[in-house]
Image (cartoon, rainbow, N blue to C red; front, side, top):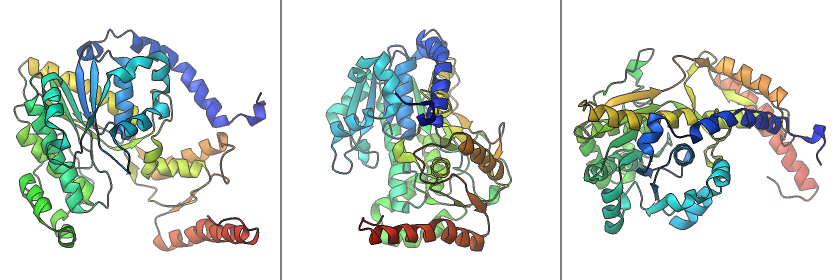
Length: 415
């Protein structure tokens, strides 16, 4: 039996939070809210269900509602076929509570072979017919979130993929609600710095069909050469493509029961299903900064302490997405066919600046330092590139070379 000293303080803290969540889980299990009743017996189609957002969404839908079925779009990846990827996805700890309370949920999770980058989402005619006959709610979450993605890839996945998902929605005979997940930074352009981005549609920087045609017919190298000219005031191809995709949503979705959800920087769970869960394949960006500092791996950070960071837990985002689908169906049934946009961010009501965030993380690291940490958890941060370079050499590169040298001397492989 582990002694008190051997217990990971972070795990002990997590266990305490989980015990406090039991009342919430019991309340949601009753299933008597209007939102839960909306999903009772419903069939949902989800793209991006194997990603960070998608996994927690699927888990929440099964745990908190009595959905009849969830279709999940999966593509072969890294040599693994659809069923292999589904089994791998279900091994994620996010499903642990669900496996204990509803072990039969897997029977209601139906994988659909496809690829959001392909025409008709790569879905076979047979599966297309099944989906359009049964689906009542669609949640389109699939996207490439790489900031350095070639424009060709970003356009085909984030713009054409959005179009193909909308066309699927239009073909669904029982469709009650369609949620398009965008980003709070879709319209974060140079000319809007220090300004407001409202929950409205903005003019697209390029006609969506023109961009799709360009991506389909132009060689990637050639398109990369004109990429900077095309994206102009946008910081990267990701936010640019998301802005163009919203134009597709506005035009194609005009006669659909549709809404848009714009999350900011998505970070680990606040509560559901357990505090602090993060997709292990998604530990980068803000999540990676926190995890890297906590494990003693990251000590030099290039940040501006006065920059406000729009962080939002993944369970908050998905609670909004689930509720937005219900609200959209209710609104359309009442005769309101407008497309509503819901921004999910903490930067307005609960703003956090990098400086304060680093200070808070440093304090928490000292309280809950894990025995698995490779070094003492701390981080020096600066917005000066020269100082950052010096920090990187002192705190990262030189220690790495020293460790490699020691490994070489004692005959162990260098890392």
